[in-house]
Every structure is written in structure tokens, then in C-alpha cells.
Length: 468
Image (cartoon, rainbow, N blue to C red; front, side):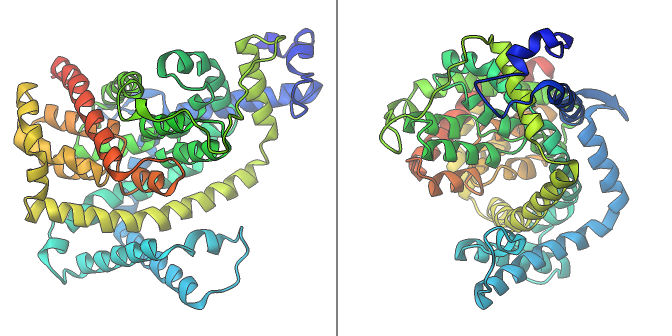
């Protein structure tokens, strides 16, 4: 590390002629420390496991649990306020049609299309019905809307608070550029993808699936990825973040085993990422570009080693970051965007999905072909686990919400891990893909979902039998 701060090394790293954005001389040392310190803080928050209160967890998990305990029963009132403001604000913008600047927070938070307006309305309607216990049992039952209202939301609100505000330390101060550059050759050989897709994957792993997917969509529109590459990245690397994985683990009751839970997910995702690009439907996608030709150039300058270029990219990114005050302001805007945009969707889709699971045989019918496979894999309570896994196509939370009632911890471990590695869920990732220019339809997405489910089951179950 000190070698790259030394003046003898600055002609390579600190006086870069390839990119004028690279900091020079004294600025290089300051930017290097900025990269190291803030990235270390991000790693400490999101990645490093430790023993706490009898269980292995991460610092983000400790902060979440502490705030959740402090809020107590008051958190449900916060949830009601969030969902109500989300719909009323969106309705006001839709009806009054005020003139809003493109960068206006009001426009970003409340200017939505009719579909999302209807979803926000359902979210608000359900939350008040559940609170007042007025309406059909399908909605207000403790095992349907009650699960969302009393079990899931009290975890999500404090989790989002800490995760969104602290994410820039992990994603915006050079760590992604550093790791992405180092991983580039691996991605090319193993996954048949450009090296820059490593950054898309890390945007998901360290941030959120939607973040990585949005990066992929933009890169495809700019013709940095072919249609095949974009389809592979969107359906293979738009994985749920560490923060969301913790939510699933906590919801389904395996957070006391979180490190093994996450390592199993990482192993499964790695194996699926090798297999999926090599089989239909992804392998049959054409290598054509949105503009007609590729705009990608991933060459590393001749005077740089891969490591030197990784350091250069990381320090340059850290140097380009604004003040902490501006970073915090942007994070607060992102936090409100998550609260107002996602919480109502969870109430709407989650309640309906749980209602279908509790009061109809729909998911049991769909899951019937999966039961023999689960029994062959010697998974306890296979008949209960199969519907939970199929529900993952609707929303990533549903398997955890339904699976939490399964008695076998091993089966809950398998269901929870599988829900993360399935990737395709229509409440977010699937909807974004369908709205993008990447040409994947609903049937293709469901086929990819099922293929990932089968691959995941084999790997996760093998690990689970070793652990339990």
C-alpha cells in the first residue's frame, strides 16, 4: 500500500496521462486514504462477521436489532404514515399535475405511472384494514397481512435506515472499482462476460438487486453489452444484497447461522452463474448490440499491471466523491425513495401472495411437480417447502414469510437460501427487466427462474445436509 503513495510510483499511478480525472501529487495521498478508510468502514458494516449475543452476525444486523428494539410497537405507526403519504402524495401529483423540475425530490418520490399508483393505493388500503381489523380475512388474518404488518415491516424500516445511509461507504468510495478491475479476467473466463460486469454484480451484492440491474440496463442501452450479455447479467448477477439477505435470514429464523447461510448462497450463486450462460434460453440470445455495434473497450494501459489499474480506478473514484454532507443528503433522498416506493409494494404484493397461499391451492398446484424432487433430495416437510419456493417468482419475501412456519430448521435454511439465489421475482427485478430494452419475456423469465431453482436446490441441499 505504501509503495503506491511513494513519489517513485506516482508517475504510474498519481500522474496518469490516460485519464485526466486521476488525482495528482498531494491529492493522490488524500484520495488514497479516503478510499482505504471509507471502504474499510463499509466492509466492517456489511461483510465482517462476529459473535454477538450468542449468534454470528454483521454490524448492520446489530444496529438493525438495536433500533428495532428501541422503536418497539411505534414502528407500525411509522409504517402506516409511510404507506399513506406514499399514495396521497402520488395521487396529488397525478391529479393536480404541478410543474416539477426533473431533479425535484417531489417528482422522484411521487410522480409514478398508474400501475404503481394503484399498487400504492392497495398498500395503503391493506395497511389500514389490517390495523383496524376491518375487511376480509384474506387480507387481515394474522397469517396474511398480519405477517407483513407485525413481522416483516418492523425489521425492514430500521434495516433500510442503516443500510441505505451507510451504503456509500461500500459502493461509492472506490471499493467496487478496485474489486471489479481485479475480477475482470475471472468474469471473462468463467461467465463469458465483459470484465466491467463485475461492477454490476458488486452493485447488487453490496447494494441492491435493482441497483445492479439499473447499471446493466444503462450499459446495454449504451451498447457496452450485447443482448446475450445483458440478459445473462440481469438474470444471473442481480442478486439480493447482503442487507436484504439478512432480512430473509431473520424472517425465516436462521439468522443465528447467518455466516453459513450467506456463504452457501455465494457458493450456489457462483455455480449457477457458470451454468446458466451456457444453457438455453440465455445461451441462445444473440450477441447483437442496441446501437448495432459494440462500444466496449476494456483494455488496461500497457504501463499498468492489473493491480495498479485497480488502485488507480479506486483512488480516482474516491477523489471524485463530493463532501460527506452531500453524500449524506443523497443517501437520505434514496432512503425516502425506498420507503415510499418499496414499503407499499411489499404490503400490496406480499399480502395478496400470502392470502393466495393461505386461502387458495394455487401455489400448491404449481408446486406439485417440485415435491418429488424435494423428497428425492431428502428435504423434511417437502410438501410445505415446495409452494414456498414457487412463491419466489412473485416476490422474494414470500418464501421466507411462508417458510417461517416450517418446523425443520434445515428446510427453512434451504427455502430461505433458495429464495435469494432464484433472483427473478416479479415485484421488482422481473418488472424492471420487462420494462427495459433487454428482450426477455415473462415465459423466458419463469423458465430461468425454474432452472435456477433446480440448480440452487441441489447445491443448497448438499450443504444443508452437512450443516444439519
